[in-house]
Image 1 (tube, helix red, strand yellow):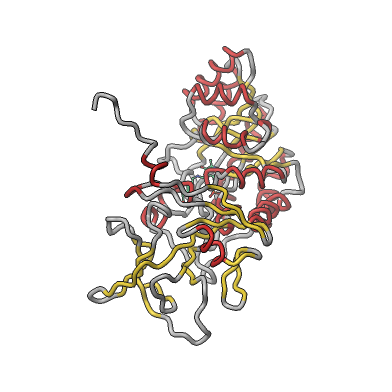
Image 2 (cartoon, protein in one colour; image 1 turned 60 degrees about the vertical axis):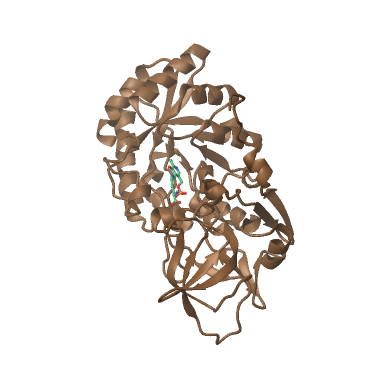
Length: 421
Ligand code: LLP
């Protein structure tokens, strides 16, 4: 459930009319609902209340400072994958002991930064990375708390570009080599093994792959304990999917996911961490855009929007579906017409939807892309020299711009011309 509902045919974000934000901020823009973000975070938090746990928001999905502060202030941890994300989490006030550092290519500089600033744990993904971390921590005279990310060779049954738990994927160490690699970690100076990490992919719409992976993690936990390792924490990753097509899919609920975790690993008495991104932020955000032109093609009508693939790349990159709805609804009984919905960028890939049934629209009308809070703004670019679009946060009847649209000058002046030109 989200807090983007119609009142008398007008789309609202909580108690603010989207049309009012558009008038104040200009289009296109992202808008997030605080109540939805907090609600989704709490669903996960409650689903794990049977045990000691920490929900670490995968901030790669949405990393605006205001959003991080909102979630961090309610007790969320953060899952970070770069020095930049670590710095963002800290700047938003999240303490180091609530930050887990994931990612397949952490550099020594990033390791040092996190060890200096405070870190809950590193999720180590390979032997060379383990050795690098051992070097950095030893040279600083500290111990780095680690889990090792195992690759359970499970089919996550999701889009190939976001599946991470098969042996052909670059992530983690093969679970079959788990005991060997943990033995190596235990022998290295500067490392303190505390647990196991696994993450098999994103936008999973069934529980079964999670179950298979978690069973393997439970087996490994027992084997490692028998080998003398202290395994007290399991980081079970993120990946729970959201319903991108309203009415057409019902991915498992966080409560069902929490119950599955309890069933598969509850008996081990470990502290549980999870790293949800999309389910916290996805349905908490809209991308709002304006129709620039309705163009008659040979055999179809194009709705040309002022948002483009540089603002929301998911349809071009993953053939992703986003529901696109009018901000002002036509009267009940209005007949829908099919549109190809496109942006102004100069490539045919800049297509959001083909033959999408919509109420008839015209120049100046506003539309909203649903489920755009996750992997929307964070994946945007200034391709075609289109300035990054603003982000707006709503809470009740208030809204604020939480990232302003740069002016053309601001965008251009990030470049420098060498004096010898
Ligand atoms: N933990 C790790 C180690 C991850 O790699 C990811 C996502 C997550 C947690 C969060 O997964 P989530 O709960 O959001 O599914 N750009 C793509 C999604 C990439 C996901 C990458 N890793 C998209 O737009 O669909």
